Amino acid sequence: MLCGGIANYNATEPPPGPKNYLNLILQRGRMEGFIVLDYLPRASEAIGALASWVQAGKLKNKVDVQHGLENALATLRRLFEGRNDGKQLLRVPAVDRVTKWGPAWTTFWSEPSEAASRKFPPSSGSARQYASMRRFL
View 1 (cartoon, rainbow, N blue to C red):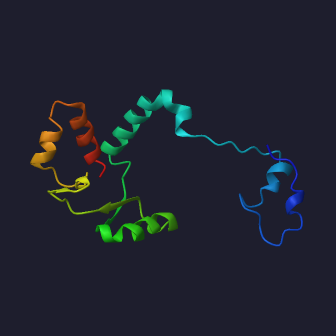
View 2 (cartoon, one colour):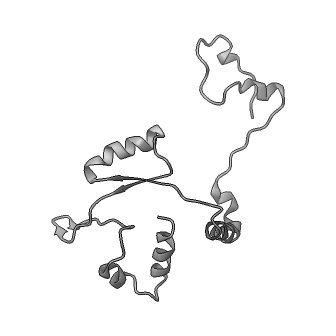
């Protein structure tokens, strides 16, 4: 609910938030937020529609890929500055060794490997999820 705006009557700079939000008060306007959890019961409906749009080519996925762990901070900065074009990803080279901290990280969306086949047997739900995600990456 919005009511009044006396705190900003003499402001020398625009207040944070929507531009000319006081007009919402004068027009008796209404702002209401929502999050995806509000529509969780309809998730299967959305997934079906989105999948058909992807298959029909009506929905396209943009991916902005930066390369190298040395670029991690710059890539994160790109995301927060809005300089990415689509989903921001950082591709790091796969490492086939174990470090003193445990298994080295590998790129989830790299080309399928024999190791991935062993990790996700074709009959497992994880294999289906992995294959499903690869379409969008």
